[in-house]
Image (cartoon, rainbow, N blue to C red; front, top):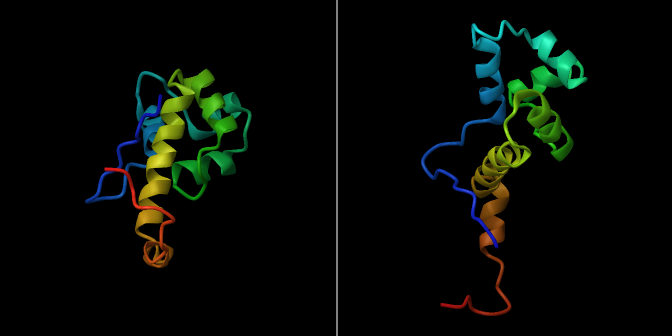
Length: 108
C-alpha cells in the first residue's frame, strides 16, 4: 500500500528541526540542546545543524529520535521527505525535468 506524503504548495513545509526545537522549549522537560545531543549520542553541532535546517534527517537519526522523543521514525522521515519534495519541485532543475518526454502517456 502506497501513501502519499502531503506537501504544501504555497509554502515550504515545516522543517523537522522545528519540531525538535519545540521539545527544547518545553518547560516541563528542562532539556538543553547539549542534553538532547547527549541522549541521542550525537554531537551538539550535528543536532544544531538539524535544528537549523542545514542537515537532513536520515533513517538512523529518525530511529534515534523515535527512541528518545517517542515520535515514530516514519513521522520524522515523512517530515523530511515533504521538505525534500518541495525543494525539488521548486529547484532550477525542476524546469529541466519538466521538459523530459515520458515513454508512455500516464494512465487516466
